[in-house]
Length: 143
Image (tube, rainbow, N blue to C red; front, side, top):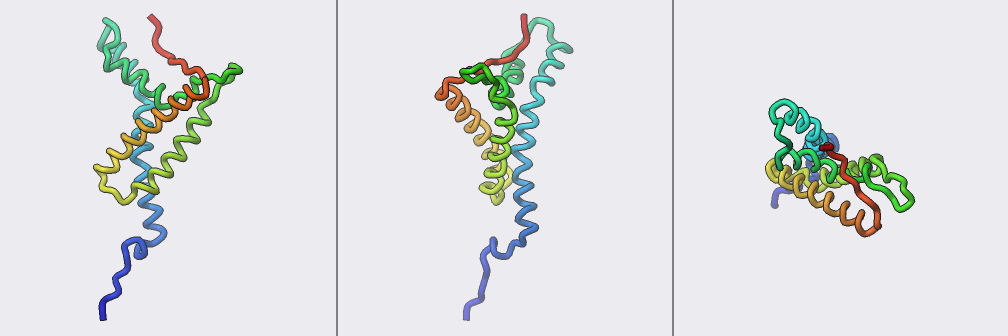
């Protein structure tokens, strides 16, 4: 007569499962928000502390968000913008999929998985922009 031990996923209630999904989704959301705020913080630091021009680190933090969220600055062959709504919808789908796949990982592994996911999805979006023949423009400080 063996004991009937149920697997972990059967013991977990629906409420705790949803809570774990939400907690897992917070990691990429916070990383994407931090990426979105980078240009503003970089410009503040450039104007406060550095008058000789932007360094490579400052340029990275200024342009990286435009690479992560490229569809607002991407134009179709007809000249119309693809738009930020498409970008936002794609990132929301990625966050939902990420949280469903990674909620059982340790916190440190979730952070690594979120970084890999953000870089991978960004690369795939730029590959798709090239394959569709769309034009992507960077918006930056003028000299």
